[in-house]
Image (tube, rainbow, N blue to C red; front, side, top):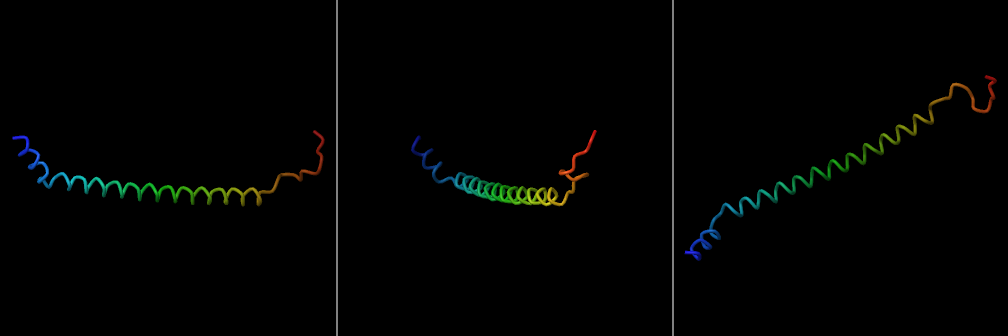
Length: 70
C-alpha cells in the first residue's frame, strides 16, 4: 500500500512540471530585478550629473565678493 503510493508519487509528471515552472518564474524574477537595479543606477547617475551641471550653470543674484549694506 505505502510502496504503491510512493511509486505513484514518483511516476507522477505534475511535480516536475511545477518545479520547472517555479524555476522559470524565479529566473524571470531575477532578470527583472537585475534590469531594475541597472536602470536605477543609471538613472541615479544621470540625475546626479544633471544636478551638477545645473549648479555650475546657475548664476547667483549678486556676486559673492561684494558686500551689501542692509
